[in-house]
Structures are given as C-alpha cells and as structure tokens.
Length: 239
Image (cartoon, rainbow, N blue to C red; front, top):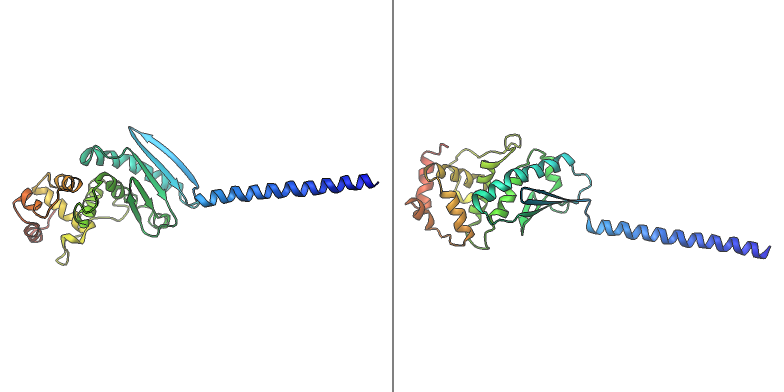
C-alpha cells in the first residue's frame, strides 16, 4: 500500500516536471520567433538577380507582396541596364511594422511600411523609386539631395508599372516650384530637359556616382546655368 501510493505520487510529480519543461521550451521557442519578428523569408532569383523578401507583418497582404516582387524583377534590371551595370545583383526587401515612414533604402536594403502599403495598395511603384536608389549608389555628399530624389522620381515616371492606378503623376508646373523642391517637381524638370538634351539624366547620374558633380556641370552639358534652364522651363514647361 505504501509503495503503491509513492509510485503514484512520483508519477504525478514526474508528469508535472515534464509539463513544465515542455511549457518552458514552448515559451523559449515563441520568444525566439518574436525577437526576430520575421514572419516569412523568401529568396527569388531570375535572370541573374536575387530578391530576398523578409516580411515582419503577419497581416501583410500576400497579393501586395507578389506585386512588389513582380515590380522588382520588371524595373530593377532595366534600371541597372540603363544607369549602372555594376549595381548589386542581390537586393533585400523588408516589410517592417516598426518603420513609420513610407520607405527607405540603404546598403542594398529597401524597408517598406506595411501600414502605407495597406492604405495605398496601388502604390506599387514605390518599389521603382526605392530600388533606383540602390542603382544610384551615390557616395555621401556626392551632390545635392534634391537631384538624387529627382532622378529616382524621374525613373519612376519612365519605368513605373502602376503609376496611374497608384494616382501618382508629375505635377503641372507652378510658379511656386523650384528645381530644389526635389521628387516629382525636379523629376518633371528633368523630363523637360531630356527633350532638348537626350543624355543629360544619364550624365548627371554618372557624375553623382563618381562624385564629380559640381554646379558648373549644367553649363558644361547644356551651355546654360541651371537657373537659366529653369527660367526657360518656366517660359514653356510643356512636356
């Protein structure tokens, strides 16, 4: 009788011990997943390019993910071909709920806000803009930031796959604009310039990458200062 009761007690205590270990291991496993925050990680390779797609948002729409991947393989090879054949062949996308902006790029990695993509599901060409920054690969202080962003939006205008549905377009010229306003305003100026000087965007991009950009480059490439060019643009901004 004594022996029987002790055996049952030992079995009960052993069961509690094993249950505790299982619970602790489960908690540790869950903590490991939470600490990384990665829901999924995919590697897709096509025609010599690889995209690592890391998703940290469990609510991220799979169809948006597919469209972003498709956009990358549509536009990035063309950007590389036109502007920088030595650009990276492996790029990383991160869907990051902790990021509060729209998107940001550096060191071959583009970080996107899932909140923005949920609220603007047609803004797929944010990919077109961001991966151009990877192609640009400009050294720090290589030139003005307004030109960096202007060229990236120029490329979005030229290579974009969904701009119309994304309700993105170049703005009509306004007298309050300046070429230093960056993004779409500078991009529109570049589109206008290219009509008269077909290689100017490529040459500006190359100068920025080689850190040889100076304000005098506009006169060198066109015979006019950038301020004179802007005045001429304002006189007839038709694209």
